Image (cartoon, rainbow, N blue to C red; front, side, top):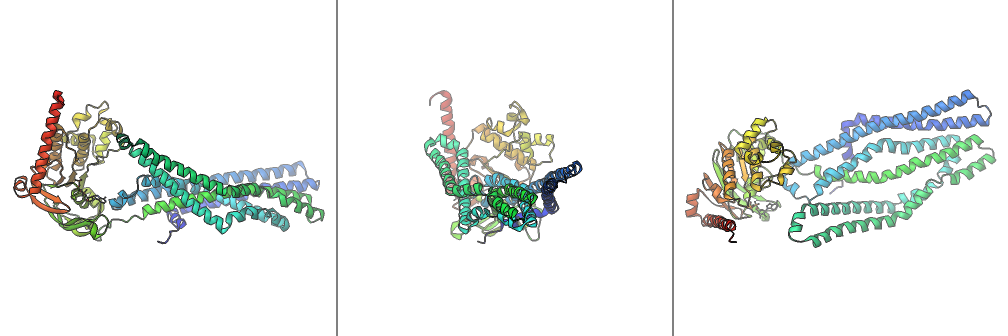
Length: 594
Ligand SMILES: Nc1ncnc2c1ncn2[C@@H]1O[C@H](COP(=O)(O)OP(=O)(O)OP(=O)(O)O)[C@@H](O)[C@H]1O
């Protein structure tokens, strides 16, 4: 695949603040011009002093010129930096908004297949690293390169031989840095460094996210080994890189400031043979010294530029995620029955990897349809295809007779509520978590939805009630209670189609009964599709579809299926048996028999 040009990607974002960036460059140039004025001033003063023409008036005049130049340099630099920072933050904002937008438009499978920590790393760390170079590159690289260039031109105007003398030591440090091999090594090492950095970040995130499992299964030592291994190999790599480059770095940092090494002897020779007067010799030495600092500063931007390149290329990986196509002629359904016709689906894109095979199913409006079947049969996949987490590999899904690929994504997300097993609560108050279902809902509407989902009783027991933050509440809420919050969210959203992916573990009968009641509230007048693991919750469903190994093996009501579908009968007996076992065990626990 052709490597993308990071600068052109950056420029495409920079176009939104073109004027500010041009102003930043213009003020950076002005600042360089201001920085040159004191050198003219000093030269004039030395000349006057040597010619014995220095008067208090001319002294004051040239000192003011020097001071004015210095102030011009500082003020213009400040203005340039301000424009550059505003541009940098605007570009960063735009990149982050575009990345978040792309996450919403990409098939969910593309996102979940990314390694743990990678997305976080790109969003937070990598994109953040663009800000520093971007905000400083224009004013500082501008002045770090333009200032020495202007000084060099000034030196040529005094005596070209002196100008060349200042450059005499430069090849000693520039050649090792710019040689093809050094550049190739730097690029190779930098890429390896970033990869090692990514790896260590991923291992750290995985370790923190999995700490509960690690502790539970007493895997402390092995997982710590993986963590320690990643951390120490990162250290080994950086040390090896440092050791291989320190000689060049030391040579550069010691030779670069030694411009006087050639300037002084050449200047003295020119002075002796009369080509240079004292004031010219002095200003040449001052200029030779002044050239160094901005040049040294410039070398630090080589690293920053590489950081920016890497960050922008990582961000572009996300920005290039495939988009779920929106319909060419967007259509909006008028009724909400769902129809699956010959639906096959593969997560890998290969036909051989199909997890659904030729599924045909009618999910009727105002009815409860349940999907049941053994684990891994494809129930969640069917549900997610209806909400377009992915597109079907073949066949079609329609809502109200319209293929869901023709319904605008924003509209589809309005008409479908998906209550999943992962009842994710955002780190805000419980009230706001419920309000996510409808951001314009009033407090009273939020409370009503929560009451309907039977949330009020446990929320009222919390010390801060509705204002308890989800982080705090997470410690006290059971899985069933969290699920009721998600149901309240869906009730508030009031979408005409509700898909409910039930929690796998069966809860105690009291909690189950409450979840059941809240589901009934949610289902009123809606197309409800329930992926059921607790068969008792769907025994009254209008239709139950039994799915096994990606195929629908039977559709009917509970009574019919118990007679006609041996798989359903087995699942039902297993469920009833498990419930009785749980009740018995709990009973014994209470009586102290176990
Ligand atoms: N993101 C994914 N990438 C690849 N394969 C997947 C993915 N999600 C599910 N699968 C596979 O697809 C098949 C169907 O999985 P699915 O989750 O739809 O089954 P399910 O009936 O809902 O299972 P369960 O009752 O255990 O939740 C399984 O073989 C599963 O391993």
